[in-house]
Image 1 (cartoon, rainbow, N blue to C red):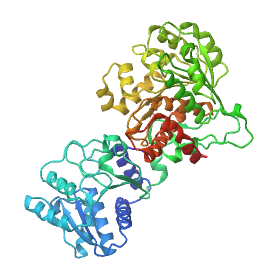
Image 2 (cartoon, rainbow, N blue to C red):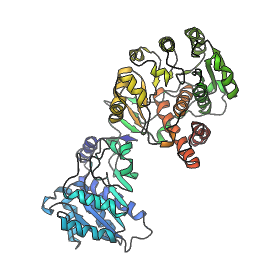
Image 3 (cartoon, rainbow, N blue to C red):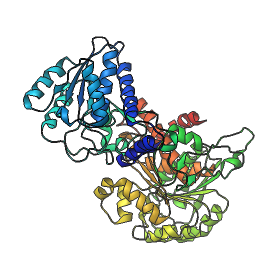
Image 4 (spheres, rainbow, N blue to C red):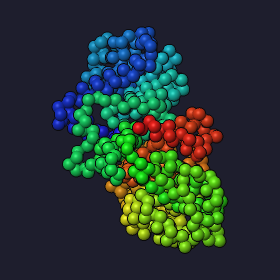
Length: 539
């Protein structure tokens, strides 16, 4: 699902009106009706339910007047509080305010401290509050009287439905720089605004509902004249994955529908060779678990054949832990890490594989760094580079641009900080911007892990993931993701689609595991156990 900024959504509204002749007041009517439908669905019966509408002076307030009218017609007792002088209401909002008044209904002021006191008393008797104060154009900090109003709503304990966006939240950044409505439900229109799906917004948005207000699909999907359509270029014969709806240069929320469109279908007459060969090069002394987890995840993700290469000193451990994965020993140095002598065999194995997963648990010595560089420069198959494979290249990121096959980089914020010369706070404060910039600079798909994982492609297409939970912040979780992405590439997905689908399903596996085992005790192995469940849903 495409994500838009406030400015982009405003341009779509205007286009719907100017080019398609849909009056803006009709869009406002449709928006208010959708919110009224949600409020109605929250109660068995609206009769004698008291609903408070808190309206501002702009179009968001106009939506609120529409909601008030429909709820009143359905039997609710509705009180409208207006946080503006009535004479300042203009345009479509004024049309709907006048309709409300002509229905014989009052508008209560919300401008002075005495008004707020009355508002607090009304809140005590209310069953629900509809927030129509500020819309997606809001930036900065809520000030003056509205601070008390928002604090009163949040302290009331009443359920809140926010129209388009919780008041006080910035639509583009997902940040609240001061008081902000904490909604139970947010109904946004046509397309989700970028800030609504970012981790900083989660506690304010509540359950997000995206409502169709009849803006033509050609407006919301973007022009194909100046945007290149990205399709699922399957590498394996017999796969019939549908064309995706992704357009380069746009931002998207990863959804079930997108992942299903990319999914490599199985026709029933295949053999294991049809589902790809994954080569995993990972591990060092004391780090056999990372290698094993990566290989197991690749196998669990549907790859036909998975082979794991590890330093000779931990080969017996890997061989004991793995039954469905083939293993082989590689030359190691005195530190128990791969030595440069392993290069030829790795490249030989890669020549018979479809994708390479490189990096988990490799160690960070100079010899390892040189080995990783040589592998990348000689490689002729896609590669997923993770963990120590990234760490050893800090300060040497020019090599990414020189890699010829598709390259997926999967740093967590700390690794991204090392790669970019920034600190972790700087990475976290601009996750989308940095991921996009580095994907373009490095010519690679960048998966910036963490809450709200960002997947960025070199052409500035961005995906944001909203599956997953804090319990997944455990050792081995990233290794599992590396294996999943590698397994998907082996089955024919493009690097971009495999990365986006991988983070989405990885998070779903974590969510299912958390429901069963809780957050504190969640282990990476629990994600592996749930992978077949989430993959089955895609079939």
